[in-house]
Image (cartoon, rainbow, N blue to C red; front, side):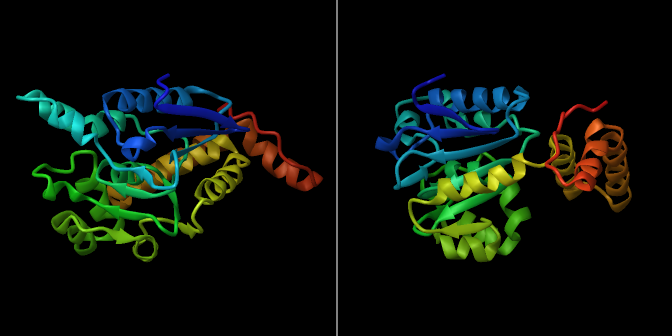
Length: 259
């Protein structure tokens, strides 16, 4: 793993820290590859139940793709360099991912927030998609995910102006779940991740999978997906352990196994 991405476990929660504070945690090719590798590895690790993504320092979560790297690349490959965020995020983990937004989240940094399931933001953080001011286009999911999350008019305000919004506005729009004082975003995200990690792993995984799938499914298909997920989880040992632990007044011991 690259030194530009720090990986640390806090119990069942894996923390991924973008570690390029000197460049506002901009994501270059090396960091993008390391982030992709870390997301895949965490998703396959049975000891990891939730992930938190954050940035080093208090200035920036991530300024997005590394513009200096892009500028140093001439010819047709420049487009490939600009899509480093897309490559990093091409694996969406089945496990919950929380963004601890410790500072500005611009361009691909905002797209990384959008790729996470939940987001906790420091109160000084700002959010923007400035690609139109750079002569490029948001290619890491901003144009796809943002309208679905905040609605088309609010999304287009960010997309077409390139101007930032503050954390309070991001909370009002539903872009983030919680705003906390500067310096406490990671602590708050870890508390949220700990709550999720204590729940039944299969229930969490299938709940996330089903909820996201229904966003683009018909009413009929949504209920079919819901029923299929219910049947899969209902057959698991954890479906017996949960009620039994409740009746016995103890903490459940989850296996995370289907059968």
